[in-house]
Length: 326
Length: 296
Image (cartoon, rainbow over all chains, first blue to last red; front, side):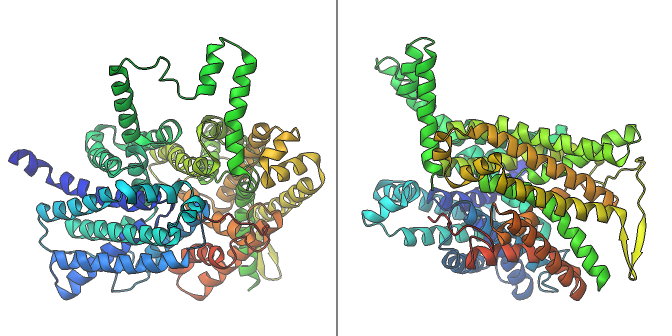
């Protein structure tokens, strides 16, 4: 166990950091807020921690806490500013915000080290501290997935108007999502800067957005466990895929595309669905319970009745079109 | 001064060719294609591979680029976007899934191009097309730049006219307003979507080949940069409006050129991000957009 830890502690630390990074996108996503601000906070947190350690020689924990504070404040303000945007427009605005963080870092002169970045960010950060931060974060996130609070958040995501009509303050929940993603992202960024002892503009750009999104989508968007699955896969896969070297990106891209098309719930969704199906099979249940949609099942039962199947397809198309009718 | 204006106009025309297809697809069939940049790059890349083997005239380069772009774009629509639209429970979820799938798909051609070129810039070495430079009032303009400007403005004008005056254009605009009602009127949405995607891909391929000719070489990563700039142009002008894309592209190119001339070059990329941000905040529908923006 100790040997295994010594051999892999870099990857273990990486998993914790990536878990927090993935959560920083997943939490707002679960609130129905399509925001990449967490990745911007990742950059801000990384630079804040690095500058504090280099200029003021603070300890690692102080640096991380300060980074979280800065991340929370910035994301709170950003949340207020973009409050009226939604959907793709919000996504684009927050991507722009994230990329601006990189441009500011490049133009920050001596404070941020310009294009080269900052080096020698030395502070003592044992893995157990990282783990403690991660456990606190996961417990907090898990709390928002259960009970009344969990149902309220689900309502805010699925139908904001309905949620508002039953007395949920939608705007406040959205604002909370921004704050949470700021805290999680900044913590991940600060830890990353301290663990790697360096941070530069190339560490916080679009590539981080893609990584965070990848982990969240492959793992699953509905629960922190999905983010954990994604973080584990995408921290350990590169070292396993070492031999295919340059084709790594190809494998990543294919996985993301297939996951987005065929399993929108991610691996976590596949696992929970499988678990439920297995439990259903254990009970001598209703036949045809596995059929996904009754209409389609009916069409199939008719045995090649083209008309019925076309009707079923039309019905499913109708729901798509309803959504697009603005 | 005039020299800067010429470079701003030719840069704007490249943005225009690239952004036009993106805006059209987004404004009508509602798909924001994050793989548009990689289609642009990969069309130029395939053209480069063929150009390495055989000597090609300009028209050959353009034809290959346009064809590759159109095929890639249609393939994305058929293999990724259509299945997502068919499965998703509502359009809002589909929209996000499409965005994510496109980011995933985009890494595949990028990885192939990076592997083949080792991330070095590539250009058309053996083409029979030769670049010439003319002097106009003391400023220099190359024949490639003239082609780019004429193509950009010409294609935009034709497209604006087609959207406004033809039955197909009307059907397409109607899909953008209300796709359900439009399909009740007998418009085949998925066939229109394939057509629009093919057109957008072809324009991206054209932009890729022309930009490579103009600069001499491009890197595999240049598609991503252009993608963000095109977003800025589209959002500034207003999604789905041809006039908006034209104004947005030239305005962006002009501002970037001014920033480049007046300051150190490092702030140039902030222009497009800043525009995206500010426009979304203060005028989300853009300068020329329809005054409806989905909220919540």
